[in-house]
Image (cartoon, rainbow, N blue to C red; front, side, top):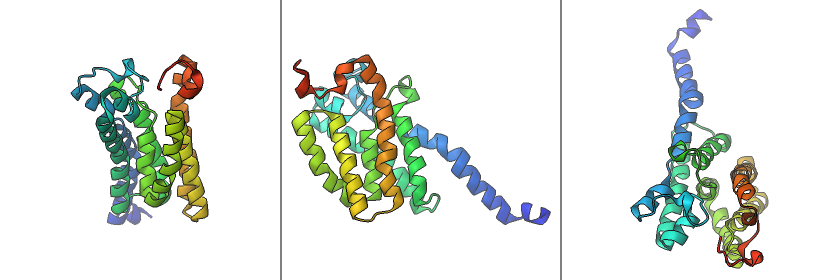
Length: 219
């Protein structure tokens, strides 16, 4: 037993365990915490997204305040900060597919509660998109059709998110994808919902689609 503990194999196992479960979690949180929307907004002369528009530090608010091109850039940047770490960790065999659930959760939590902006970030919709793209790009492309239709009808990001997640779930079930792919919409949708609750408490009208409020707002 003592010989095994002192062996190179034991040292390798301990190093792998330490990296995966001690070093990696805070690193993933900090990667998710990179405030893409805030950085792009500052480049466009917007000092604080939290004080303008929907007050959300995300792609949709950037699109309204700085233009669709910058909104699209923000969406891609936020999606990549989820897609790339997962792809690299899977590519190097550091995590299994089932680990994507906790890895993605840490990336989302970093995005939603970024310490770089006083622990107040976005809702993680673009980050969810990046994670789901890794799990099944085809399902995401299919899911975008009803998601975009819902958004065009309601002009409401939560509606887009719900449509995207429900359709992806249906694709995962019908396409007999992995258990991880089937659980992903539930896990990441719940994290996004929790991040949305404080906004709805502060401004209850945000829980209602703009087209139903009758106040002329667009978010």
